[in-house]
Length: 445
Image (cartoon, rainbow, N blue to C red; front, side, top):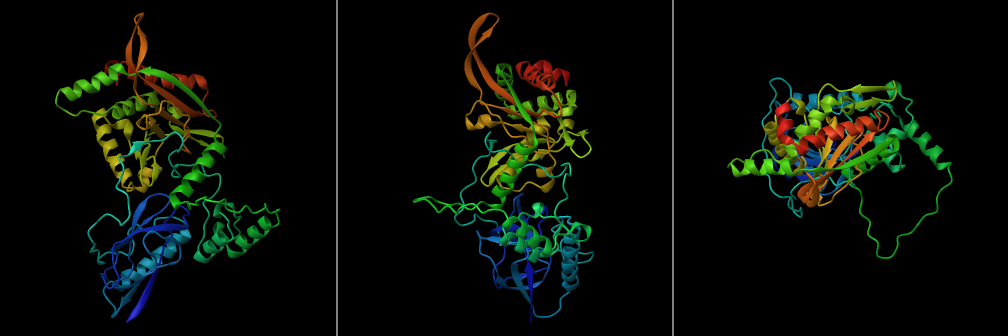
């Protein structure tokens, strides 16, 4: 009987820890190669980790609800005799080491499998985790908490830190250092133990701030990996992007009535957000500079050929902005279907990595929180974000007469480096005019 201990792998994007959400196996269970053994939550999403080993579960090294560092023991599997899965297990370990060296972050893709290898899965039935709250209906984004930024197409002003050894990661954590602040001296840009010690020594030489003790009655809540990533994203966006905000009140009565007529006809029809998405995509086609990113190294605006429309969704684990990929090729009904699927998946924290990183522009319906206006934070590396407040009955002048109309406030935040106010106003009026006369807008699409 030999024991094999599987260490928590590098889950990609420089992440150094994960929260144990739910074990899918128990001690004494038999597992096969590539069987999902645990759900973990990272700063990006909830993912299932497969086992590179086959055998009997001897020990689970972390309890549900705890945080585990990359490189720490996750599970120990006992194998009585060599099995047909052994070559696959060895391949898994080699694959992990190779992918970690490459910094690819793809260590969970095809993990431990090879042609002809065993790919069977045996899983415990999904059930609610003890102590977890029922999923809330996903609202659309709070103006004060912005979606996590996409790293997929970000202009690389600095290389993603490469760390081969989990010991180096742990040392940096113990010293209170962020990997992206450490100057790498290793071959290929790898951060070494000496780099960590040198960075720590330089920081220690700075004058220390006086310690502040806890106040009576205060409660400290550790930031989850998701919140840490969100905090870094918010700070980066605000520190790097010179943003400007403009807004306009829009008469959405005609759009509201269009939706109601569709419902009265017996078919559910597209929701308001699907129409707003369609009008936003059409406006981006007229103003492609807003469906772009900024390459600061080459001082170029990079206009993107496809509109991947990010939809800000508030779920239990936080705010995300998964993208409807290829939104510019969809009809209003297709957008409605895609948005409903995307938001349902976001509520469960199960969007794909591609959906979470592919957005080129974000639409933010903060009206679901019963607020009217927002100066949202741009989802870096995107260059703009459009938001809608709640729709209210308000007095409005139509043909010289005051009447009740359904009014919403539309706000637009843009990177002033890529365009000026004239372009921003033109984009806004394109969307606003479509909202005020949807029949004409749809006929022209």
